[in-house]
Length: 198
Ligand SMILES: [Mg+2]
Ligand SMILES: [Zn+2]
Image (tube, rainbow, N blue to C red):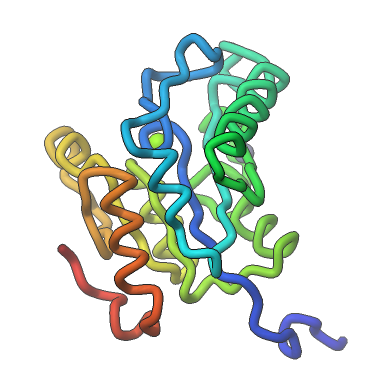
């Protein structure tokens, strides 16, 4: 059978962003506006992502599967976040979430790749040369499996609690620093940057 993928022209690259702990404070199962607080500099950082990258938010929201809150509540909050970002000059190209609990054994909860592949198909994204930014090992592991470049933010907190089993390509304090890494490397091929850690 003819495979459209093999003959496809090079597509967009993406910056895949985790939500909680990357864009907003991770206060634990954030699902209400009252608990949603943008991290300092996050909006400016998102605005300075080079235009060659699609901006895709991919988020595990197991609070839905655990029965803590509803899918509708999370979607409402996400719409509000996207509107706020839009007012700040940031266009989010896609936002995808996994609503399942860990024991559901779904195919979309990070570090599984279901949501990344969904975004890839919908937006025509090339994974090599794309970036994954997250604050947890599951984010970094997903990025490694995608063969994208990976940036761990909030590195101090993660490492103090839990020595990582998987090594991010870059470890930085926050989203602002992560975007600086992307901007400084975006002209290079991935093989030039793939295994550097800072
Ligand atoms: Mg997170
Ligand atoms: Zn899922």
